[in-house]
Length: 255
Image (cartoon, rainbow, N blue to C red; front, side):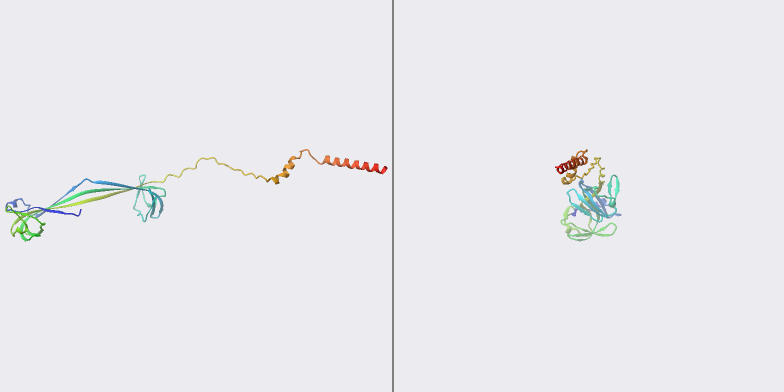
């Protein structure tokens, strides 16, 4: 990505080559092209359940059971629930949240081609050369290490350049890059409604007081008496006894 590949395709000297150079109105022409390679996509999904909403603070229970505290959630953050956009203050405990992040990675190469034609004004071998362009201005160019030049059918290095030589040069710069884009989507579902009360019969319990056995004995004894029982027979029996006793006393007195 950071690497630059710079090469000079040609740096030639020839009077006949002048007819092939660009117009004097544009001494240095630059062309840029971009070549894209196939993109790759990576999707990650996180799911959780809202546990607590306190102002702009959110606590979510993740699928693995861990609790995640998300403080200071901005009011602009939205979650799509049943096609509606809801903010942090609309969330409720029990809501299910799903956070989907799609990462797209696209490698590309940016190629820049610069073409220049001029006359050698000054050369500082082996690193640089100053060319006098056709509009009369001078411009300095760096010479890549090991660069060779074709002059009068012979290949020479920067030391072979001389003032007054006409040259045409093309510089190609290739810069690889990687574009990374992320698309985030947050969706949710409302908690299920509370279940209605079940239609279950109600059991009513009546509590009856049961007396202790000791307290129940008088009642049991009274229950054993015949319903017709009274004191009249007893009184008659006593009267008969007293009458017999009186009769016996009289017999004793006569005797």
